[in-house]
Length: 97
Image (cartoon, helix red, strand yellow):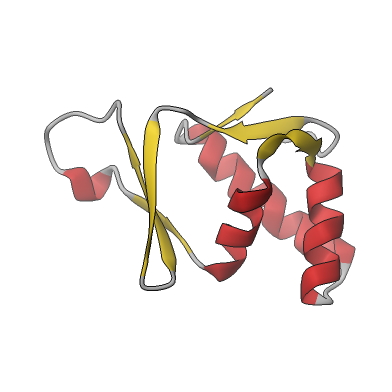
């Protein structure tokens, strides 16, 4: 379960590139097989969250920043952030600090 009072950071074992408005993430620890099954991409909102995962701010702070930037309710952003971070942690792209 994701704790919004915890700090998360991007794994060092990946390569991330912005390609035509999407952030494409490829884990370096993946096998030589089908890279497309190992790739992960983020849309604009996902990129905004990803860029704030600096290992210094807790998720509560990040949620507040995103809610302010997008002029959206805090609870709605919280749900989106928790869903994304849960998925990124499962894939090993983000770790709890």
